[in-house]
Image (cartoon, helix red, strand yellow):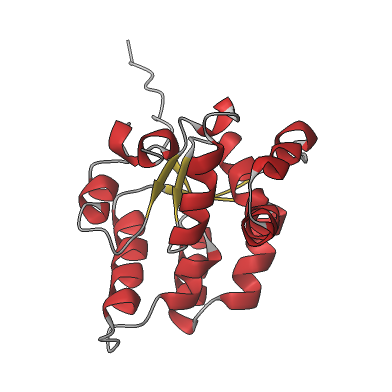
Length: 180
């Protein structure tokens, strides 16, 4: 009698276009370029799926570096790209009005698609946008849906270990924990 094994579904990760823009090739020496490249390589090496909505994909196409473009093509070839169809979360989007600064409101509204995409997957995001992290963390007390989203900057010394570990639930990386 043969045993039927189900393939374990990989964890999905939303990768902000800020990573695609900054990722440099092997010759890149700038710390941000190498951190973004290393994060993308770790995602590929550890069989993690990249989750793309149409809005995330279009932003990637607009801003991606040559390295990121080749990486994404390779991820498609490996069947490690998960496309999701997002629906605008109008109630959540209304909550941006609770931010004090017009600059913060505009930034969150511009990148809200990252949150909508993460909510449809495993609630994991890597992004180099620390200002967005700060704005979203301020919304956590009033937008409960944000609390469990993990947001990690690839320049963080813990990012690669988190990716290599399979993106485990790490309370310190949640938006609510980073609001403190």
